[in-house]
Image (cartoon, rainbow, N blue to C red; front, side):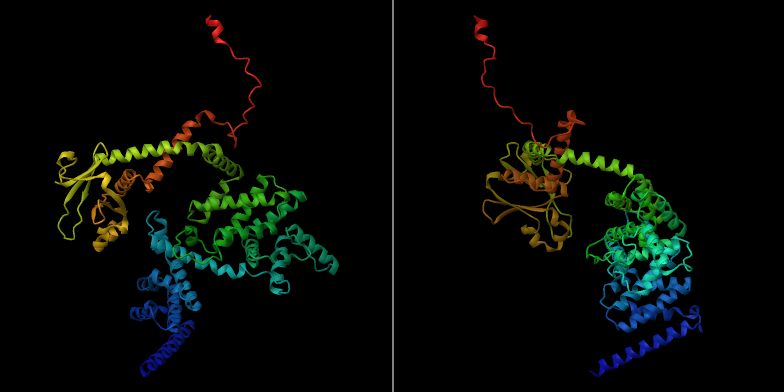
Length: 569
């Protein structure tokens, strides 16, 4: 107890010391450049230690962030001591202060990294090289960062909150440069209502009511204000352009913005907790500050463009939003690396292109999902399955070279196994390494197929239980034949996954069982697809009915048939 008390007191003293140091540096009395590498390593050790005092770690993260932001040379030193993985681990702790400080340091490291030394961006841009583990870390970083917007997304606008009301009126003032100071209260109120209606609010007398629904809540107000302040000319052009259209053809800015913000929240999965196995991240996230707001600014202008292309009216609002959602999701699926790349791609994907893509996909679906086609598939399956069965048995007749399982470090011996041409015997025996396809007569051992009682695969095989050291490497390639009585078995380790599928399918056929390998399912799908396409060649551009045409009733008599007997006479 005395030792733990001493440690606790030491941690308190260290926390106060580091806090005082931080306050001293904030006053600019001492330059960050004067810090030694030994001091940096010591501070980093507090962060890298797994079980450590939370207060010390919190202040240490704060100090390291300030170092990174103050000097590029210090950034290089901190980067050597702190790994991305360790910072990601800090994001999983329950202490929100440590989570926030770790996120701040991580983002500072990413933002300070130059073009030639940007750790995470280098990993992302080298397409196809991101390992699963790193992809998961990037996904978690993206998820945690975007989820910081969740509170705004789930908070409705408070009509009694003066700050929020001021933000709404500031949005209106940005769109309309009208002096209303000299007007009476009633006149000013009437003018405000008209302007809020032009802005596209449904409730123009009390526009705050439009932002009560959550999601997107206050986040919709944030995105609209961001667009109005950062892209003022584009904002004014949007409002002015739609104000001059007929009422039924105008694109309502506020209503569209609220719905668009909601769509972006769903696409970016804001509010969803990070999955333990997730790895689907957006590369653009790591190259763009304020991703949600910037995406909104691009997409709200895209929405206005799509509205005009569709010649939409107020009744078409939901249809337009569905097209815009599709434009965004299809573009993000291409993994854009920058906002400019996203902007170019999403604008190129206009309404006519979306219609073409939908038409192509619809034709593809109709070809494969129409009831008559599904019925034809079921009729073709038995014939194609029999074809696959014969191929499997022929492959077993050709035989395969296997390696014997050995616990010693010397090279394992080889043995060969093949099925007899009449499918009644399995012949096997040891062979030399240079023997490519030994004749069936040279194989000394044989097992009658009639004596085979069962087939085991994977971890159920006896040799997988005995050879635990090799189990993980060959578990997916192991299978065993149980024959005569259960104590007799022949153990296999297939040379490849393809051979494993061929042999397990072939043995299943010999045992009168259904084939179940992934190779069989893939081959069956390919054969079905090819056969269906061949059968439907003559029906190109002809609509396939959902049901067969009605067969007419038989005639009342058959007197119209020709009598051949009279001719012969």
